Length: 395
Image 1 (cartoon, helix red, strand yellow):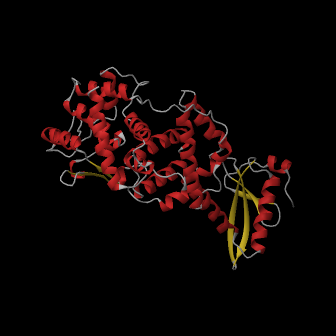
Image 2: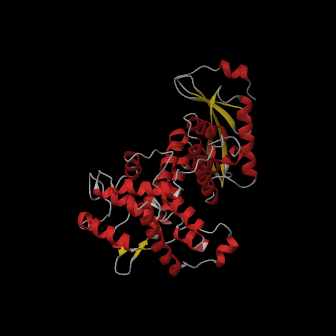
């Protein structure tokens, strides 16, 4: 006789478990502690099996019958509902084990294998660390746009608008990596592309007036701090590479006989090796510096340990000590000074100037053909720039 809710509620526990049948294999087991458990009896290949559906009233009579009917449909297809249930459990367990944090770690490892610069890796790990704090332990398929936006809003609330935009980009990169690996279906950050505050772009401060630049060079020459720091600023002005590329430079990168500094691909922002011609003034500074740090690995070691390079704040801090605020000049600003004054001179091919700065042509078609280093002209350009700085020093 089919069961009803009234009949189920009237069932009393006994000393031993007992069964009460419904129909089509569905029955209820009543245990001595009063639990009422749904089961279904079925046969596969002549073998009797049992399927559990849960406890009443969490699983209602109507729901138990629905589950029974679904199991019978599987049997009609020649499938074992018990095995299907176990497979679904395994699939769900696997899905929940693929968290955002696990995919972020895999994405970072991929970038590391691709040889991304350490500075880039540090920034990526820092950004994704904020995402992991917010939802890293959630299955990646459970991470929603509102969750991500809440994380980004917390970064924005501190006034870090650019960091929030970069964080959205990195989270999106992790999701696209997961989609490519078949463990996510979409990139939810796409819906957030217009949700963030657009930061006001402020170029790094740089001195573009030749007379003022001459005053800066004289102030650097008179710097009363660490000699290594003073030479760092002088070489930065002469060689106009990115501060991080100079700060991390090692002695084995320099061939003073050939007058070339070769910066490896791993340290270059644009992932291309860079050769830098060394004028006489740079050779003299390197000789002076070699007496101080030549027995170690780095040209500019940390004051705390020669096994580590100089802090990234050292050169900017030195500019502040000699009286130049962050609104007047930055360590990175020497590149803008060089680019502006070299172009204004009208003496040099703009492509040679751009190559000296290790810039990559933005036009993809033109970049395909403009692959040369302009080496001979860049050697003359380096000599001219060093002489020009000397003239500015002299007032």
